[in-house]
Length: 395
Ligand SMILES: Cc1cc2nc3c(=O)[nH]c(=O)nc-3n(C[C@H](O)[C@H](O)[C@H](O)COP(=O)(O)OP(=O)(O)OC[C@H]3O[C@@H](n4cnc5c(N)ncnc54)[C@H](O)[C@@H]3O)c2cc1C
Image (cartoon, rainbow, N blue to C red; front, side):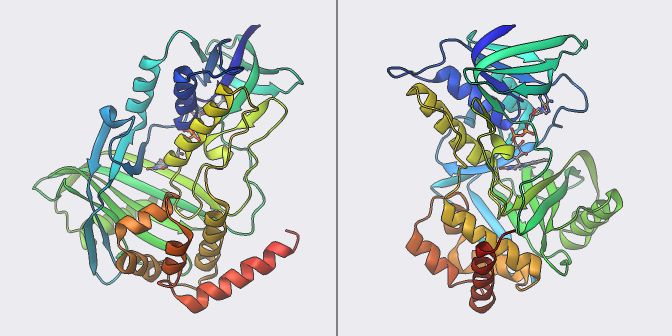
């Protein structure tokens, strides 16, 4: 059995981000990962996460700038009636990263302190001094790895119990149009003109890569996913009736369903075993954005290990933001607010940069309260009271 300081299970956004942080960490007295790191990813097959694109925003330059697929410094939001808010988002930039480029970049930069292992993990046995990860490699041979700390990013078998759970579910087409149709200097973050579901919200999303190429997505925040025909019909309506793209070909597609839940994620799964990434509560419940939370969580874990502390991954969102998100999810799910009107009004009254700062945890309480008063006050106050009441009662 091979022994390491740390085993990271899963080489998706969270596993790769954490492994890179650990490999680059500067140990303080009593800390570090001198015993090495094992990064364990499932061999090609059904367990492997499909390729995807990650979008996120940050101030100025960042560690992934060299491998971005695109970045935009202007964003636009279109309301249900066609009213537009467009603005520069400086000092922020909105960035797009392909998971394949990210993985190649991180793996190529890892030192020989990291063992890159291909194995489908079947079991993690916790213990007082170490945990043992067991799985099988591509040829079916058993693999056993012992580590002082194990960080598991495999998807959870079930979501935590919650009062409200919606899905951010979507299908996107990478399109190539016959004539110029896009402004590559500006991304359309939320276009609320598609027909709206009775509860929740539906919107389009356009990320231009050139005057004739873009990722165009149809997204809903609702309880259940659509079937193939449903997504295709929604995308045909959006690209045709709403955007008027004319002739185009679809060069690739991506699809996903990200849980948006007020359930509490536990990142400690044992004495030596922890959960990270989407499985470790990194998804912001009100948006489905996860990538930035993953970066904060990875940095916190590496910081704890560098100091020789127990590296319990933090859920990378403030409690009050999670509470506010719980109210929004409930208000959407109950149909108490009109989702399209809510988001259009939020961006129109506060401006895109302030809303983005709030959604990434970078806002302060007074500004958040002021933002709260720009939303439909009566239904949101009623929903806040309902959430507070429900929080007092067992689930
Ligand atoms: C299509 C799509 C687009 C998204 N776009 C965005 C976005 O634009 N911005 C954003 O912030 N968030 C986005 N998200 C949400 C979130 O960022 C991603 O889901 C992200 O990939 C989560 O990272 P993760 O490491 O937690 O999980 P994953 O990236 O899914 O990684 C889990 C890893 O575990 C591996 N694995 C699974 N089972 C085993 C096993 N038994 N043994 C070994 N390895 C195993 C998988 O192969 C995978 O590599 C998107 C999600 C999807 C599905």
